[in-house]
Length: 349
Image (cartoon, rainbow, N blue to C red; front, side):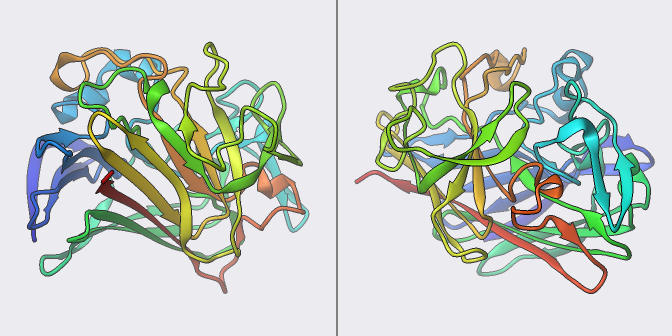
């Protein structure tokens, strides 16, 4: 196992952007930028023994700052905070005080607002180089940032194991009650040559999904997946039942005990023989098949288009801060926010 830090030569808001490389003895390799906690590369060996990068991104850090990319910004591989997915009308109340956020997705607030955790340079606070290599990043979101209350300190640890597991461990503390719902927005494609993910086989361990309004905002209603195109309780091709013009952009309520670490999702690609299994302590997983993806000059000069990736975003229920029946997304000073999500790669034998 090894860990390396490589300067990118970029300074953003007075902070240096560093690439951190984690490698295990099998040659599995993960590259992370401390800007946005971006997972830039996740290289594994496929069934043919060939090295294959399973996440979308850019060959150099400069790609993430390109104005054309930012104009149709898809959050490629980045941390999402303070609040994942949509907050309806960009508004919520805590202890009878109402907070109005920027409405950056129609009438809603999406992924933390105008400048979320995905566009911040995080401090590198710990590097562990041993049997399992890891890096811990930290970001302090000040009171009033994007109009969220409280000074919030977030630690995010990336750990690569010998079993080809990339473990993301989150902790957060606040000095006043605030809303928090963190996730990671990795775009995956398990096919050797990329392309449309409709033939990837998908399984999600969820009997219900969350109803959304026309603006993708969660209403509070749970709907059984049985008999609908959203039934992934048994493995099936992602494109088998989808609307080919829309794909999937839906939150699934996992069949699990709240807080337990369990298997949420499994994705299989036949040509590469790769399986991506996602384990999480979180109560829901959001499946997004990248309808709105439009990126020029990605890795190797490739363009990334609609349905060219899938995301499994583990989190608390979207808009839960406005729906009391959902598990709470309010963090108070006496509490510690924790979350663990694992991306495990294996071969389909």
